[in-house]
Length: 445
Image (tube, rainbow, N blue to C red):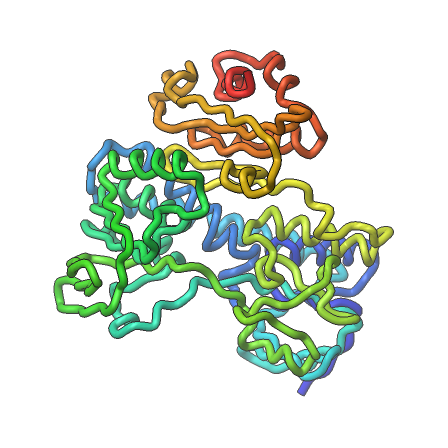
């Protein structure tokens, strides 16, 4: 067996891993980057996450409503595939041209704290590394019930790569990934039913926000059923039947969207002295260290599962090797999030419910999206905007925007919160017109 030594071994070609590899190599350090799947160069976001799903969403938005068109669907999928292939190649080529980086297509398994076996198609390599960085990401969680291995049962990755447009879709799970796919395929012309096991729709949201989202989705024709236990799938030549506690549903495709699990189960982490939590996420300290010489970054470290958090994890780790070592996870002030429904749902900071539990005295500001001139121009007047303001000092505690272009506007509010800019400053800010951002004048008034 071939044996090699290196300063740095990075397991996983994700956002944090690829960015760290480039930085270390440009600073004269030797790097081996191991990726098990050659279709995952660039990470989840580029290949099976943010980019392909948002490409489909954008394409679907252009189609006539209720137009179930298989031909158009295949063309959309081809454009999506071309985009992803180009991005994947660009990510690979960018690292492959750096002198000190060696990319190896192989599965990784720990043999010891500093030794990893890389098993490739053609050869196995034993790598001894001074430092090891794990950036293996997460995968869709499985639903272990009878029939779950059927040919019409898909996870989110499968649904991004369908070769036909289902007329009927059942989605098991009522979380944010579920809502995004429901939005996409509803816009493409499919009949969509969401089966949520919980009794409350979007339990983490304030009720006024959740009700507005529910109303908007159902007005578009998406059916949402709550408190539904999914028990079994049965497949025939023509369709699949979903057996549940609230009846049976015949469908052409099933999407299982019940969360994600970390890609740690095949790494033999115990041989490296690395501990995981009950769900399999690697336990790390505030600087993402799992042991003296091993770091975990991104989804696998239990970080919020967004590519921009993986990027910030890279900054924290890079700072320990090439900087002053002061950055840490607890430095993160506010994390903005967006769910790409029609319209998108974006948030930062506290919800009203969280503010109530905090004991702070606060003011709630609300406004309907229909009052925004730009929303009327776009023909996207659904939604609501909501802000939570500290009564004692006027600081913004949080905001939830369910409206057109909210995924852009939420970043302005995050920057204001991070820098202690009060609500009155935004209220009196001069914004261009007509824009969605000028709605912040009214929201914070």
